[in-house]
Length: 284
Image (cartoon, rainbow, N blue to C red; front, top):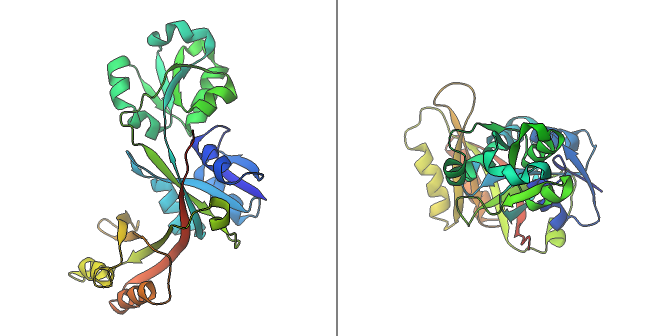
């Protein structure tokens, strides 16, 4: 069975994939939409894409493409700790403090703001498609005298020299990835997790005062715990939003269906994005 992930090799996405999908075939893709499209075109059976980071919040391209274009069911969630390291081409290891540019994914750059401000104030940063792509770039062009921010696997994969470890601003940094598939794959067996979440997409009726309060009340009086509610633009005009709601329980026969029915009675549109096991993996 094939699993698509955000490549190239040695991204955090691949770390997440390898921790859960042992024995599968791993296929890297250059973009997050490319991963999802690969499932739709049956190039792979599953896609693992980043959804949210502790420090930087949601990965908007994942949410938007998932809800507006691909519309693939979420069958699982993988959360991993994120450790960012500064690395350079081995030829530049002795002069890493004199690096003239820093490459990484935009989220990784933001996660290491304090270190970069203190060590490389005034040096330009350039965002690329992934942390691993940044390492590959500096390894292919040692004459740039540039540094990259990425994980340890990327350093091993491409032969880069780690010159500063754990440069992220906060220790409790995690990224959660969603597993997408059209097939009925038992992610609970693969992950060994018994903790379930359910994710809903809710569109409110237009110009109805108190609609969001009524939506939340549908969960509150049933004592359903919500771990997240987030608005995203509908792209139909300023001020038009839909909401992504994470429920801390498995889809049942009574409580969540009752809440959905109540929201629909209010004039809301409700779509189930998935009810799935959620697992936290340790990379050590």
